[in-house]
Length: 155
Image (cartoon, rainbow, N blue to C red; front, side, top):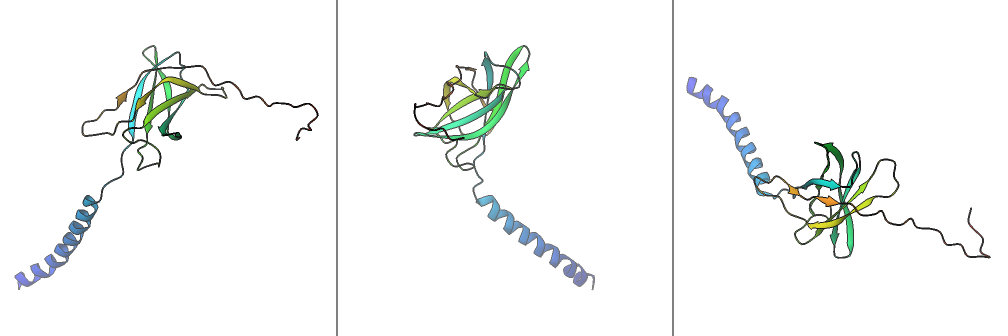
């Protein structure tokens, strides 16, 4: 009699464990999306509190793939930004593409580009990120509206 009771109790538990195991095996076989790659480093002539935008260049297309910030650390301005993989955001990180960074200072309208770019690197086991020290260039010139004599302006 105790054998029958133990079997009746064990069957539902085994069925649940089998169903969970099958579901777990299916999810383990499906490939997870790529992970973002952390880029970090020092910023020459930067300021603390700037917003960092990471763009990835794919051919002639530039896609925004992450944002971060700058902070003052040990007397140096440093930044960190996660750059999404192509499987997370189409057009983002993939081997062969370049990462470009811009830095927008607090209260400023235009961002300053880093003068260098770097290849996107996929992460792996034991990965700690990509150190990429940058120097900031000048902000792009402000676009001005051309006025043509004799043409009416739109209000």
